[in-house]
Length: 254
Image 1 (cartoon, rainbow, N blue to C red):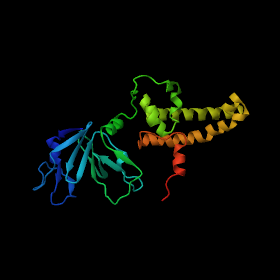
Image 2: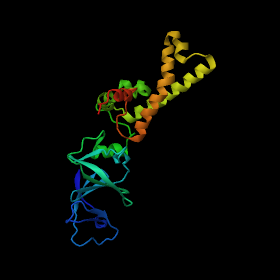
Image 3: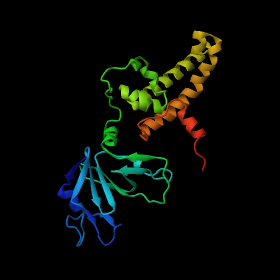
Image 4: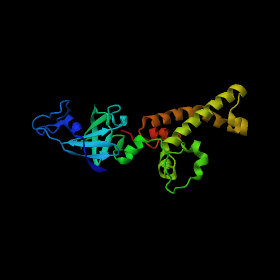
């Protein structure tokens, strides 16, 4: 991240009162209040810009970040330059940076929330190009490519540590696995409707009927939950097949 000077027009819209460290507001007049001051320097985080106003940090973003907002009264923790924050207010921006997020220091007494985001250039790059192709670390295509439609069924840790370094975008392969799961589900419906037997049963015998019911019942339900994780953007590494169920069963008890 490199230091940058925020445009004077936007600086004039912000005001900070030294007498009250928690007083921060967006003003429409270009003339700031008497005695107000703000840090004239900011930092660039990719296409975003960050300004500092006393204890407040304002992220001027080019794209919306809905995952920063509270869900079920739980505010995610946002790590920026090694310091924890939470979203205190969301404000309208200008043409170049339509979204402004006011961050306040995370209270020391507050317990860690279920979600934590580290706001840096990598985060912004993933936000702006979540489904872009990933370059393999070795620069060569992986032999796993032939298994592309089913790679998304692997669990999140395998996607992060094994598949992404080999050039597979975890979000793309997860989405492909959801589409594949629904395609198998539709195929099973047609097979049962027209021949009164499942696809796997027809191919390999009655001993594989359990696999037909697995595809008919679990595939669509699992794909729906994982598809929601992809659309929600809560993580770059969506869960694998039934990983969400294991996390729910073995989640820490309050």
